[in-house]
Length: 430
Image (tube, rainbow, N blue to C red):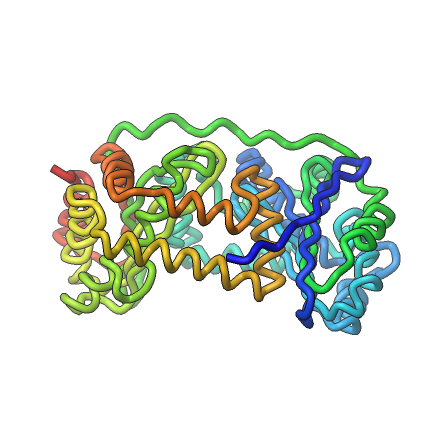
């Protein structure tokens, strides 16, 4: 994995600037990572981070409307993108190298000087977004939102990123401005650029255009919730053509020593069509078309979950197979071939971002913000050091009966519902 030496500078206002020169490429990527998201919200103001993200597109002092702002970036060959996650947000721009200098002051203004125009228009748009995860009675039907709420309860890690219709209705200009003033600060953000750039020149420009960003403080995350003590299950009836299943487990957080082994574990479960989950549920048994596993790491906690979309009558059979696949892995651990393949694919995946300025900037920006391994080589070294015994042991820690939560969204008759719930509540790796 050939190294790209990052240039790191901390500006007087505390903003970390990372430059990743990639000569020969024809694209430049600019990202701003922010410690913001539902993790940092109260129940009453849930969704304010996501609302604020939307309002960043609504104009600056120099570009007074959403249209003017979008047009300015598009004339420079770029399109502004933003997203809010549980514990971080990202503002990004991919554009030709020759327009970077002209775009940087516009990008800085979006991040530091939003004017919050047309708030009611944007509120209506977000309302439509929230309604996509609700049924006609206003009940939550998104299985990922449901599983996080089941796992974390009233803790902010269980809040939906978009908030609720009720919290959306109470958010106003004051809440948005206060949230922006708290989170969009030098010590709480990381600015990253990748492409055919001169690091010294870019850092000087960043120091000029981000000078108005206040220093602020790094916003501390809420403490992780207490350990789960018993299995949990939730069924939500919804008249969809199939049932959406989740089998979720509390897992190591991003700073946990077991995190690299958990990353390898989920890759053994699901990293292509030859891995255990797809091979068993789809190839061997033909039970469904869509099955997957995912590992979300957070500060102080994490979630490893399995997902499947199935015919209603097959829900108990598929849930049984999901339980069986993870139980077998906890008993046996990975084979040498599975371990080698997972490590090799991880390395090739990271190697691929060396040809992708956007992926490169996103990797370094988020890693620096979260204070985890901050180069692809360092991260891959962590994965290479994982042993089969470590994967088996972390599987035994994660796949414990008291650590499981199950969700089913669909149309299950009482017998099917009872069977699915019983499988979750009686889950064991013994």
